[in-house]
Image (cartoon, rainbow, N blue to C red; front, side, top):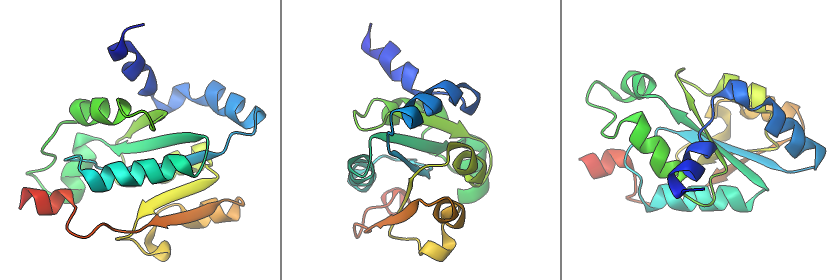
Length: 158
């Protein structure tokens, strides 16, 4: 199988995740979820994703669609379109699945996936993390990855 096909296999609509989720749960795989716009991939993103993968067996990344990024970040964003961002993230060895979402928050994804671990960057407090309460109510945990100073897409754009 060619590498581009392998990358594309990682990018899935939520509707196609039932079988894999059932298999992972059957084999007691620990599912980790994180999400974001990932507009301009930088070392902070890479470290967050590596850290997240190290917490479990399967890392699922929720990626904001172009329309969602525009609503959250403004008309000039995203810099990179969703296909480019999806391909970049899915090409990383520690990303197992990538799901694009149109909503402003990933709450529907989190409720559907029911990950054992939810990871967000250190620019969030637990009380502000979408899905944190849900994950903890289901017996999971919320982990905050420490922010790496000076590394953000917003700072890179200037």
